[in-house]
Each structure stands twice: as C-alpha cells, then as structure tokens.
Length: 123
View 1 (cartoon, rainbow, N blue to C red):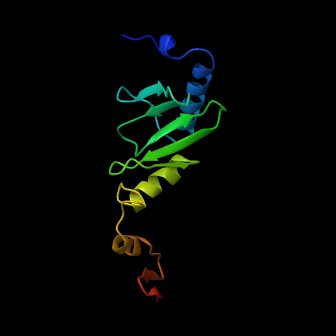
View 2: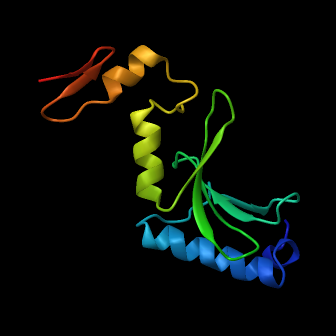
C-alpha cells in the first residue's frame, strides 16, 4: 500500500486539501472508488471519481477547477463548478462540442419557449 504522505508532500498536500474542500462544497463525497494524484507535467493535484463526469484539480497557483475530458476525442474543458461541468457533459451527451454533430447541437440548443434549428429561431 502506498502511503498518502509519500505521494503528497508539502504544497501538494495543501492542493489536495483544496480539492477535497471543493468536493465537499459541491455536495459530493470521496469514497473507495476515488483516485488522486499529481500530474507530473503540470504539477496539478487532481481527484477523480468514476461517479463524476470529470475531475477536480488544483494548480500550482492554488486555483481550483473542475475538468471534463471528452471520452471520444480527449479534449479537456475547465469549469468553475461541478454543476457547470455536469451540465456541459449532460448537454453534449457525455461528449463535447467538438464531437457533437451539428444536427444534434441544434436539438440540444433549446429552451422552454424557442427551439433553434439550421434556419434560426422558431417559436
């Protein structure tokens, strides 16, 4: 078993704490299926759960963001809140704007009173 304190030391441990605070603020919890780590390239500390559409990370500048990685193309999209990330994933059927065909985007871009198609708004 790897010790938490072997993987997270110094400022990495502080960034992990910030991620855990963001998870709690989003009304989420950490369970045995969560994973955490340090990105060797960026230095970001991240926490991921199989129950979330993305992960939360804290940069070396202590900025906390939620990141959605498209399962089809790998594009990454950052959000300020878990709710924004979840809404984005749901809107694009767990894909991203790059992978959603144009005809599907028109179907997704609706509200209660109007729908938007290839020829503009209709009532």
